[in-house]
Length: 117
Image (cartoon, rainbow, N blue to C red; front, side, top):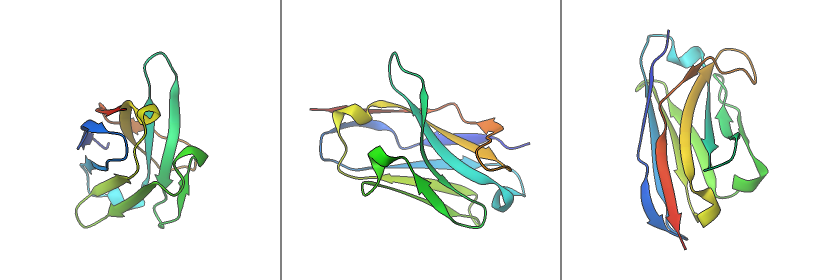
């Protein structure tokens, strides 16, 4: 069982940066693939980025070059550094954990990111 708690969201202007943090409970954090997803108003949830337990990272095309995912296994934390934010990045951002590629069993409650133009 893994519990995930996101933080770091807020209201920013276009071009600003934010860093989201996801704190995970449990002793086996390092064995999980961790992902960030987002859901904009009126839209479905979409993949943003993932970092595998062994450290490989993958990004959605619309965030490549702007967002960076990282993890600190000693602190049971995964981060999402978001730079050059755009109004279309406005969404609730969710942290997720799983042990199989592409499958996420555990989800956080989400943190709101709002980017004004």
